Amino acid sequence: MLAAVSGAALVATGCVTINIYFPAAAVEKAADKIIEEVYQLKKGAEAAKPAVPAAPADKK
Amino acid sequence: MKRFLQLIAAAAFALAAFGASAQNLEVNTPAVNALKKSLADRHGQLAGHYGSGAVGIGGDGMLVLRDANAVPLPQRGAVTGLVSAENNDRAALYREIAKANGKPEWEGEIKNTFAQRWISNAQGGWFVQNAQGAWVKK
Image (cartoon, rainbow over all chains, first blue to last red; front, top):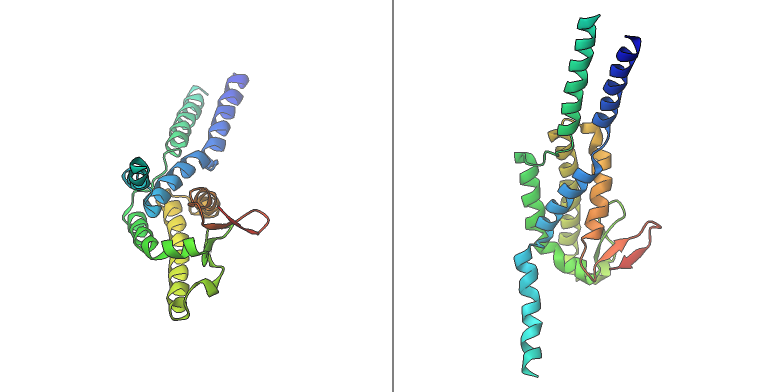
């Protein structure tokens, strides 16, 4: 019985540790998404860039 | 005793569920969205100054007017204002994200995480500050 109680307490403690842990990966992902929006690094804008220098290269 | 065990099990389950939900970061609040828009709108005015080297991204992710001589004299005041407004918005963004997640104490760590990502996502030719405090051109 004592083992069960201490086991449950251990699980609870473990969860508390997870809960207060800073979610670095989630923040990093959110930061990248926000920064891409701010820098306007959207895929449409990126794709449009190489098309400009490619045109004169074709003429050669 | 049985009831006590049930109570512990219920508490453990609730904490586990809460712990899992904490991994989903809340960034979709009116305050955060307004700051995102403000930052994106200002970026158009700042982009040229990143490219000229006048403005760099400091190691803490905040902007620095690192070479005022790269800005024509009549524009210097405006650029100083842009840098200051940008840094205020960035600080507010970290505070609002922390608040949106019910963790105001995360503000500092959010700032540190963003600092790395602002630098990592910086475009070629921009100046960023490395860990030793030196300015390097990406």
